[in-house]
Image: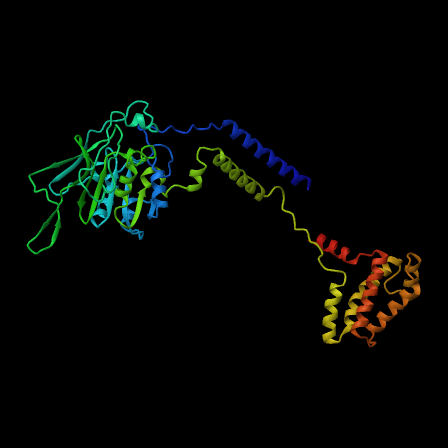
Length: 441
């Protein structure tokens, strides 16, 4: 017990030392400051550059919104039936052409892609018929611009009004972008008729590939959408309009709701490219930057080391300790049951009495074949037993062995009295037999 206590105290001391060491060496990382140079457009982020306010508003307003944290190729195989995919700002994980391909395929099948960025990847802006779509006028936000200050973000900027009544501009008088807002440039590659719908000779309605401008000023378009296959691509050229720091200005919130929720169905905000993909361990992400993970790793290493050392044999192999689990009357009860079925109680008494007589003779210092009365008198003279009672007990056992009739109750009584004699004299026959067996091994 003392050895185990020493091991436990040693483990506690080591754990305490590890905790103190990790606490001393831990350097708390300062929370990064939100800037327009390195924004975080995630719906989990509540800072001025995040979009959590918009996500919570849509969710509480009854719209079906989710955070999409899986790879883009899952859009083609997922059973989530996503109708609208929203990608906001310059993402934490850059887009690649490999990721853009399944997204555009999904749009061609009827999906709706909403890009809210000042400079979206060119491979997410496919050509629409004879129209080329790209961005212009994007000014990088150098300097210490505070995205939480609307006056700084919107200085030298005037509110922009819708250019035509559409589903995106309902209940909107004017929106207020930031001073870093870009504009969508629509370039025809050859002269085309700018009509939205045309009718073929068969009477089928065809959608014109010409982009539709919803909000614009003299510098260019701020909100545009155009068809791509059976779906549509929507471009809003300033994420500040939907960000936490600018969504409350003018009719920015209304424009965001109209743009994102204009079509019924499930709306998914891309969190995979915001660094929130399901490939990351949620528990590890939660404790990232804290000493909890190093402490846990050290504890696991120490437990494995203890198990390894305890599992190795130290010294020579020792036999297992043999503990006599039997009670004093267990053998008698078992034999009594057998003898009751076979009606051979004399055999049970003979087995037990012969060993008891041998020990009594040794205790009395006489030969095993000495007279019964001599053995009883010698044993009585050296103990507190009554010689006459001991002689009677021995006589009854010998008569039973020689064929006297006896019931199973009487047999159990004789065995019990023999055991009492052994206990009184301290003969300990069972303990002696166990020692002899151990010495034999």
